Image 1 (cartoon, rainbow, N blue to C red):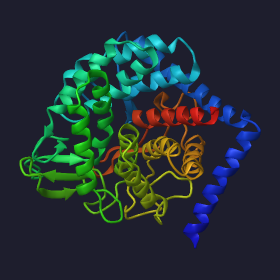
Image 2: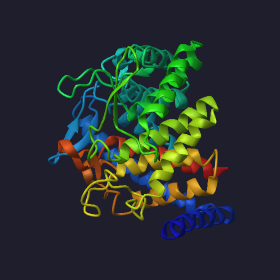
Image 3: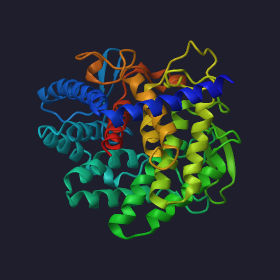
Image 4: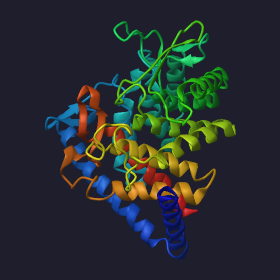
Length: 398
């Protein structure tokens, strides 16, 4: 009964929000505009610090009070330039364009990187947005080359893209993580740009085997599935960043929801949208889903409600839900997304100007089991928050 009431309240909130927008778009415009203004000012301070160094630095987080800058090969390197592109798009301020270009093109060598599956994050969040907003044809070649690099990790016998290299200590031969769903967008786009359908086929094969092997009957996801690369047999199902092998690591759940939503967009195959919807319902109906829509770092963490929240999970989820709302149950999914974005925009999660290392969001969790990046800002939380604002704005302009 309680769950039903919560769902009705969320739907009603979405309907009320839509009703208000129909009468006047001013409130929504002010909300988005204020968030964009803050983001531009906060990142303006961050860029000023970086530019003073006369180096091209890529910020990820604040660790022990100090900025953590990362090399191009680090999996999150595409998010900072991607955020600059979103600020450029949302603010319509031309000063951001050369900056976004500069920090994007600093990742040029990653188009040839084959060390892990994250080339999709690194290249598509940066160069993908750059291409979308500038039309620079040279960026298409970068995306195609990156897809070729990612294709080297495809294992035909198992029908998956191998995420990480083999790990003897963990007895992993061919580990695949749910995060890998996010890299499929790169493959779909590469087919469009090159006419080479092999990228598309790899993406679809990976997505199909992820549905088959990565999800439990309740539509929660394992973090890591280890395959025999020749036969496709499952060797292990584990976690790396979650509480336990059988727990529901929150960000992994969000990666899957977002990834299968984009697969539906690119293929039109409804089984992908249904997978995203069922995976979301696992969260929406979970007794440990907080009222403000910002999940704990793991839904089975032992000390809930005294566990860390993860703003990055919330931002990824909000962005995915805005897209889902364009395909099905628009008021329901948009109502959830609006609720999450409102929460992230509050003083609880959004930093004060000039604080938080000049990142937008507070309270994200990288890997709590490794005591790594716990309760800190993270560049991908900001990226997906800005993407969610962009998607919200586009929906409300229609």
